[in-house]
Image (cartoon, rainbow, N blue to C red; front, side):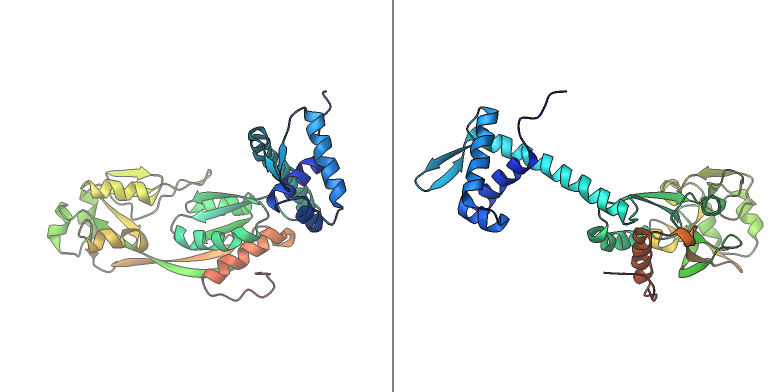
Length: 304
């Protein structure tokens, strides 16, 4: 293994000399003597066999070679700083990664806002978001494959859930679809004669899909966005979250179907912590950020 000619300390000193405009200013900031900084940079140049600084009058300026090497050195010192910070975080129990299971009915903007608030305090924690449907969310909770889970409807037995919000789903289709000519649909058997778009359950041990399933002809897709694209092409009908189709409804690109006794559906979404006894500080902070998005008290969670 080739031994390094330079040290991180030498590069940090060179960076300080450039950043603070000279040896005297850098020495004051680093709480070192000016002569020690001068010696460190001189030695660095000698070890590398290249001039990094040149003195003009009473100021030192980077040479073209020095500019290239200084720029690259910042990546190296930052990487070491990040590594040391990670070691400190791990020592304090701060999680290096977090996995969030999100039932796809839950509006993504809510989660993005929470993550945006979490980011400045995240200490580099990596986030993985798993979109899940029906029993898929429950499986992730039961198998503890997620640190936080936003689930819809009934929570798996034995787990506490904090209600976050209630989302509505409308039955929608394209304005030129034959169903729109019926006006108010009093008999749901009429729906069974047309193509239905449903969302596939992500559970491994279940085969339940989202929506009314009496239609003989149905297409199953992975998420609501795919379903909406199909509807916009004039095919089928589907239950879709209001937040996802508000714009299309307002512009007349999609229309609501009025089914007697089933105008809309409401789904309660709740936050579940699968392993509450072992919840780490990063998970607790993100939990607080999510609760704050819904104006729910965050007692017991640090939010700053």
